[in-house]
Length: 86
Image (cartoon, rainbow, N blue to C red):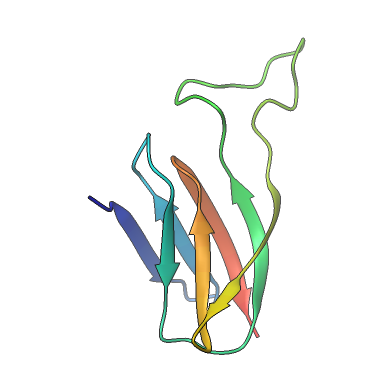
């Protein structure tokens, strides 16, 4: 079962969310071109930053792949990505 949500904001960016805590998913869109942005995920649902470990949860660069000429995004479990489509 896939549990994914996607939306385009007023700022033109695409917001992707994989709410499944256990499974990664590939999201294939009808969009063409390329996209890049940032993704936020962690090893556990309750992961958090602290003074001792300030980078446990942090945004990382995120890019698309292409599937039959369409933009595709490999979303890890429990992740949120914000991408700008060119």
